[in-house]
Amino acid sequence: MKTTQTWNLDDIVRLDEYLPLLADVEKRLPRYGEFFERFSPDMSTDLFKEFLAFDESVDLDMIRLSGRVMLMESTNIKDKQAMTFKTQLKNLDLQLSSATIALSQWLKGIEVDGKTRLDDENAKRLFAVSGDLEYGLHFGRKAAGYHLPQKEELIIRNKDSNGVGVVNDLYNMITSDFRFEFCPPGKKVCTIDTIDELNRYTFSADPAERQEAFRSRFDQYEKNIEKLFVSYQAIVKNWVYESRLRGYVSPISMRNVDNHLSDKAIETLLGVCEQNTAIFQRLFIWKAKQLGLEKLRRVDFFAPLGSESQTIELKPSIDQVLENFREFSPKFSDYAKLIIEKNHVDFLPRANKRSGAFCMSIGPKIAPYVMTNFAGRMTDKFTIAHELGHGVHMLYASDHSIGAMHANLPLMETASTFGEMVVFEKTLLATTDKQVKKQLLAEKLFDSYATIMRQNYFTKFEIAAHNASEKEFSIEVLNKLWLDNLAEQFGDSVAVDKMFQYEWAYIPHIFSTPFYCYAYSFGELLSMALYKRYKDEGESFVGKIEQILAAGGSQDPANILGSVGINMEDPDFWQGSFSIVEDWLKQLETL
Ligand SMILES: [Zn+2]
Image: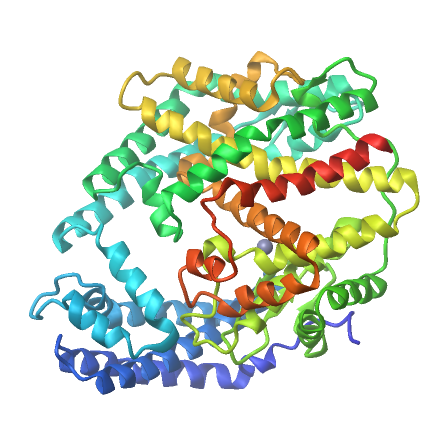
């Protein structure tokens, strides 16, 4: 098994074939116009099928072109060849969207000049022959139901790019200008230029240094709070206004519809979170004891627990991931193995390679690609499991056409989190060293706090802030909403310094992408709840998981889950994921 070399990207498109392929796609683009000329509501289903086949072929080639460039860049950010390709690809992308925009609007039921509108009945007739694309096509029409007339859409788009878009740019400019007053021990220089550098000191073993790092951070936010407030106010009021204009029932609903989710599912999720705050509060109490404190301070969350965690090797880590996958399902493991054997993984860090990890699909016919930066930490093994899990999901769904193979947001993290859970739990079971086990569990639980509870409470804050924007809106109101939000999460388990009242201004997502944060927790919680069902039901549940994975994005997520007896609007289902977290906590408490 090759694990040290870089991946083979020639399976996507060879370098010498790149530009010819690009030229070929460009040559095909005028056919979109020819098709559209022949389109009318009463057109034949054969014509529509012919169009879909053509569109699929263009999509497949476009993803090969963009995939090759993206992957080249991610392992060498200075790749000159990739940069040249990218410029040409951008051009082609623009040509493609202008060739298809009227046609795709027409399919969504939007009025297009010179055409009779595609009515619901004919849309149904045509979409019925589209196979697995049917759900996506109807979803497009449903989302377009919130569209305004074309002229108004154009005004909004322009006003956004010169209005709220600029406000968000300003937020980024203001915060990236921050220079932090902070003196690291033994250093004379007392200014730190970036937040990332400053944040490293929030992990310090010295309590005073942690406190000081947070103080330094929030000093900047406090000094600039008027500017940040004005930005946030504009963003929130704009969002509330637009959601009403488009006919959404609530501000958050504008995000939910986009995410293929019902408002009720999100309400249920947030409600269940609220009922489980005590689990993480116990974690904070446990950590206080470990640190010898009477009560944990908010600034102690990242305090180290002593010993460094052990290091691991790449080859045995991969073997273990594949073996653990196999115990769960041979097919799951075979798919992961296929990705590795095809040499579609780039495991190790090196100069000019992007940080982090990801999995990328190149359509249903080519095995997906995975990039990691394995550095020998225990968590790096779980990252491999996570990203291979994404790849496995794509292979399960590779019988679908390109427009239907990718799971929509609610199910996007199913195989990745599942794979990660399988490997984490097996690792935990096999770990006999008490200290290592403690480290593993504590890390996992604080991770869970950050992705689950904290993100959901961001969303709760946003709901409150968006509601308040129509009544009394001020810095004081937001500060209070934030502190109340923290008090609800922490109860009596954490001492929160008053400086944290400015923390809302530190969360970039609530500025750039309102109501996005629950996406992080949703996928993770859903997969954990599925994992709980697997633990309870055993072997018989494996087939159901595989059925969910194989569905890809070909159906409404609620239906995919419904077909295996799961209801996202049922609190009991979500509770399953918290019982897993609580089980980890119990293990930690008894160590
Ligand atoms: Zn993921």
